[in-house]
Image (cartoon, rainbow, N blue to C red):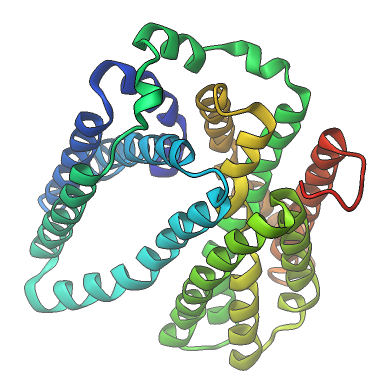
Length: 349
């Protein structure tokens, strides 16, 4: 539910920016996330968590994400991919750092104060961002009504290249959800300890930070789609030929290290590629529909689990095949998009 809300409410963020402005919308989203975390610590029933963590935090994260990915392309042109590489790497940094904060605070102070600490820390850090962020002055010359029309303009869906690229988003999410969910479970299935199983995701998150930054730097030099196709192809092959034959801690850790370096193509480069396809004026509308499509990404693990239960093959084999071929489909779709933009193999696209 949290993931679905995070994606689908980006549309709402792009709709609200012309009305309330970037800073106020960021403040609202920060309060929603911080309040949701604090209230989660007071939950006594599951439905309390649905309201506080899923609904309140989910909408808050979505609004904040919508602001960030909308403002960044306005300021950066030549180094746009590098900036998005750094921005997406912070997601991995959060996944790397926050588990330690959660564990220490929960063990020493209890779950209620753990949520309070997370909420207060989040509010303090984002207060700095709210003070610093702003839109480009030239973009402010566009009236709110005109901007709203662009955000809601369904004409962007007539761009067949954008539609193909939008389809790649949820398919890419299928692979990422499966990796995050089933890699530690697979390690436990092999007989590894809980600490060793958790280490696979920790290493994966750590190398993802490096991989996404490097991806952004290379994309500004070689082209966004060129870099995306190369990195995503390698990530797919790593699943099909490395994870497929990983049966001990050493092989799983080595897979997590290398896969983390190559697996973040969509997170680092999806927005710059969208700008290249739709253009900056239509970018808000394109992003809104692209994020709505991401809602279908959450069904990936369910489909893979259904196939896994319906077959009598080797445990976790279907998950590996499903994730690997999902990335290959993304590569094929990216190649189609590249062919639409330029038929020359050597072009920087």
